[in-house]
Image 1: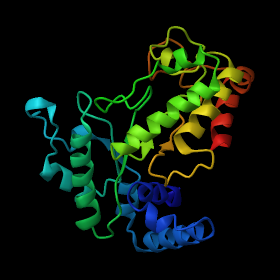
Image 2: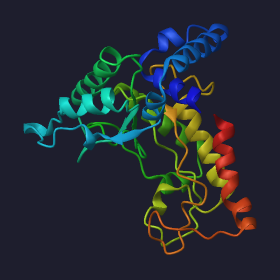
Image 3: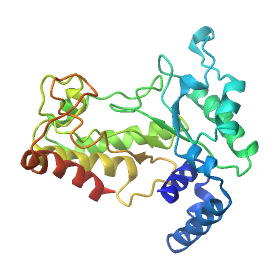
Length: 269
């Protein structure tokens, strides 16, 4: 688990160092991860497994034009004192490319220049229908609408464009696709799924992941991002329909309608 975490951190900042070649990259990565782990304290390892929203480190006074600044004191406390390894999303609304670059650069400067081991922060974003948190980006229908096209090639193209525009914002990690089966019509987030059919949802999941990560899953490319299948198995079937509440799913139903979609996502990359 620690190895995968450190691997993700290096995706965002050092592709040239880590992904030197198909044969050499694995050895170089494993050597670098092993070296870092041997030097990390328990507190640093716990911190690397911690993710906070940008609200925790942001200046809560938005500037004219919607420009978002960070609170340097809170940022340093999070990264230097508590060793936080990941930050996500926005506070309020979408940011411009210039604003994203300023935010990401400031975060990475603290992480790489002011911490003991210099491990970059991995930034993640909920770009669920295009790069929806970057102003001027291409927006697409929500997943339920894309599923209605019955066209996985179109879904792959959507993800390809999304990856390009998210990575252009300086972000290497997208919290998508949602692979829960959309079988609870009361659930307020049903539109984030590819619908109720396991076969259709699995097909769209594979297409989307390949669009984000590339057919070879080489997320070190400057036009690709790492996918994050979500949320958890059964999350999309809350008994009451209210988000983040218990689900009661018989095992046979779980295996027939829910597991295949997540398996397709894992198999895709």
